[in-house]
Image 1 (tube, rainbow, N blue to C red):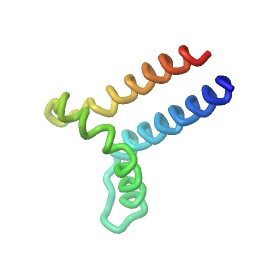
Image 2 (cartoon, one colour):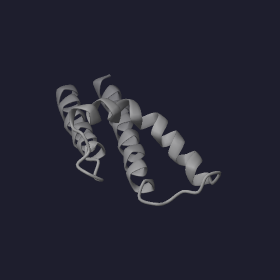
Image 3 (spheres, rainbow, N blue to C red):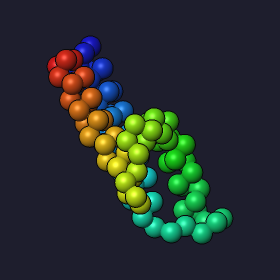
Image 4 (cartoon, helix red, strand yellow):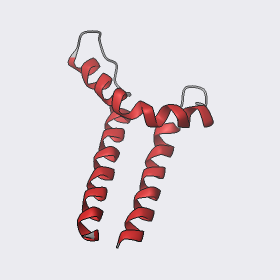
Length: 88
């Protein structure tokens, strides 16, 4: 039972990690209005902003560099390791 729960949790954390990485990478490229890139970014933004917004209020961007996605990646890994460590 706990192995199944651990597998599902691990999968969810991995999906969120990939979505967050995709948002980081896509933000490096310019997107023209009406392009598919804008549509993809809007979906990624809608999924990740509820997590990044509160974190950004705690740790504001440093000039042009927003560290909140990087910190969220680290927090996701930490939380994943803690939860899976308790289940396994």
